[in-house]
Image 1 (cartoon, rainbow, N blue to C red):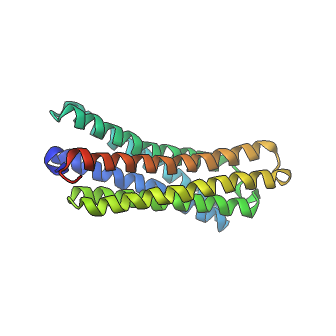
Image 2 (cartoon, rainbow, N blue to C red):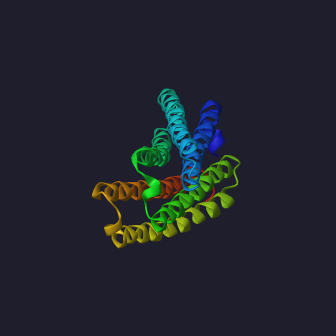
Length: 220
């Protein structure tokens, strides 16, 4: 069982780490909502908070990795868990990049159709991240069947995110004559790509969680 393999301090830090990743995504989502409500000052504060939360998550990640290096865990499990942490970290990295993009994009000057598409994409990332957190808790509670069902949902939502990504890129072409200057279109493309990469990172993390279940428990 995972709890039998991992030392309790690492488990506690891991749970806190995943919680911070979810907080990072939720904070960014709230920043988008505030922008759409034209509450610019509050939105900027929330985006700044997003990056601060991500920084806290990164500090926890480094502590976990240090404990892993010092532990006497099975080398194969240690490597698998390290890669899981790396995939989860990518979620926060991409959301942080998206938050940085939003600090310089005149978002409200963007066509509403494009803003709606961006909002739809971040909502998928929010759903996937929350489900990832739920799957982690199920695994730690040894409810592996439930965890697998949650991980399937993440995979399904990632496919929906792919469709939104394609739609958003199509909108950028559709409204290209209305987006000035051209650099704004580039920044919007980068923002959309950051969120799509965050969605991909969620699915990759889910894949590694599934591998942990198969490899390191008696649940096949």
